[in-house]
Amino acid sequence: MLLKNNIPLRYIFGKIRNELVFMLIYTTAIAIFHEYVHFTPISIPLAVPAILGTVISLLLGFRSNQAYDRWWEARHIWGAIVNDSRTLARQVLTYTDVLYPGDEVQRFRERMIRRQIAWCYSLGQTLRQKPPAAGLEPYLNVKELQFLSHYDHVPGALLEMHGRNLREAQEEGWINRYQQVEIDRTLTRLCDSMGKCERIKNTVFPSTYSLYIHFSLLLFICLLPFSLIEYFGFFEIPLVMAVSACFLLIEKMAIHLQDPFENKPTDTPMTTIARNIEKNLRQMLRDQELPQTHAEEGGKKQKVYYIM
Image 1 (tube, rainbow, N blue to C red):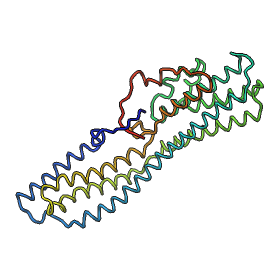
Image 2: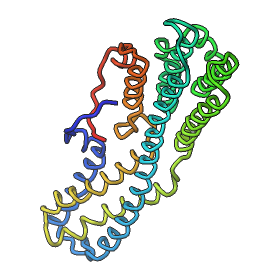
Image 3: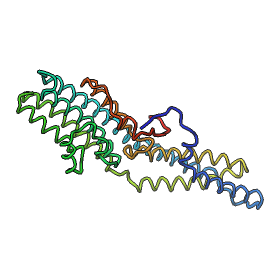
């Protein structure tokens, strides 16, 4: 997920392009009919759309708040994943002692930390419904990749491997039982964060609620030209277009925010967060070289226009 400070107007209004084209044709037809046919009953009191617009404003505000709460909860969960990933690496590094370079303890450290990096990327890809094991080769060995091939839920399998290695470390005497319990608590928190993300992903925003608001919004927009035509004439065309654009953009914003794991421009920046986790953990491991798999996103930079 790439962030950019300036959002082009083409991207913003491209989300409601079809609606604006329809409103342009609709309001122009009403203005022409009123100006040249002189059919007086075409106008309606301004109070009718005013009351309806007030109700819709409250409903859109409530929906936007609910959608933002989902997005913020997703970002909050990934903030916890950052903290727990650093905690896991710190515990693995400080609870164990390396007698000489390349010994079993050192390999245990590297397996745990590299696997945790792979877990962060895999969780993001799973939530976005992409191949969960794609691009994990730089972080896992052949046996680990074969182990993952038997699982549909790759992030869960990676945590299981964490637990198996943790038990082996305790049996070998590299960590004591109390240290094993503390590291296992960190793994439990990571598992909880994974479950919270899946809860948001699998909990669909009520479709009937969105449908009712959308129909009410269309009714308000369709009635608005009849109330303004008597006062503004042809000038009601840009006025109705501006008001419609404001309401439609707010609705689109809520639609995008309500699903923070759908790989949309307003998506939670999971790849960027996982990349930062990788940098931190590799620095703790004294391994500064980053693989190209996730750094280049398949060799091509994505062109995305939005900000957090």
